[in-house]
Length: 283
Image (cartoon, rainbow, N blue to C red):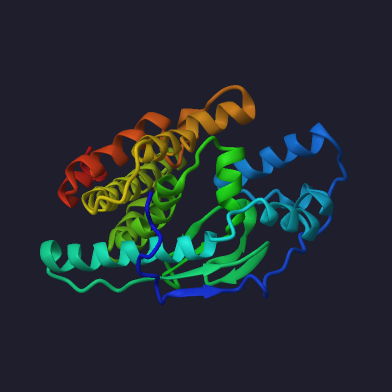
C-alpha cells in the first residue's frame, strides 16, 4: 500500500511518553508458560475480560514494551495518522453526499501500556478500541506487531482495516446505532445481547470495507493488499480465536462474529462501497 506522502491527520494525540504499565499482582512464569498465558490474556481481553493481573511483570511490563517497540515499524505512528486522515476524507464525503450530514471526525490516542479513557482504563492487551463516550479511538502501536505474530494478520492495508473498523464504530455512534443497540439490549438475555453485539461489529467491518473501496479507487493498493485485509478479518473471528484458546468454540458466546461473517461483511462493504449494503440488523 503506497501510503507515504499522503495527508496526515490533525486529530492524533500521542500519550506514549505518559502511559503507564503497572498491572498489579502477577503469576511468575517462564518459557512456553509465558507465551501460553499471554495468549489466554490476549483472547480474554478481546472478549472484554481483564486477566492482566495474572501476568508476570517481565511479560508485559516496561522491558517487554521496549522489546516489542523495537520490532515495530518506526513509521507506525505516521502510518496511523495517514490512515486516520484517509478515513476522515472518506467519511466527510460520504456523510455530505449520501447522508446529508456533516461528519464530526474522532480523535485517535496513541499510548503504551495503559491510559485513562472516558470508558475506563485502556490497556495494551485490549487491542485497538473505540470509546463512544469521548468519541476517541485508542491504539497501542504494539498491536500491529501482535496482529502479525499472534493473530496471523499483517500488511499496511490490513492494519488500515483495523483502524477503519474502529472508525466504523464512530460512524455508528454518530448515526445513533450505538444508542439503538443499548436500548434493544435492555432486559434481554445474554444470548440476545451477544447477537446484537455481533451485528454491531459486523456493520463496523462493512463500513471498513466501504473505506477500502474508496482507497482502491485511489490506485494506492499493491498486489495482495486486499487478500491481506480479508485474511486479517478471518483471523479475528470469534470461532477462530476461541478454538486457538480452548480447542473448541461456543457459538452462543460470540460477540464479534465468525471468521466467515467478518470476511463476508468486510468484502460486502468493499465490493459495494454503499452504506445501504451494511445493514446487518436487517439480516
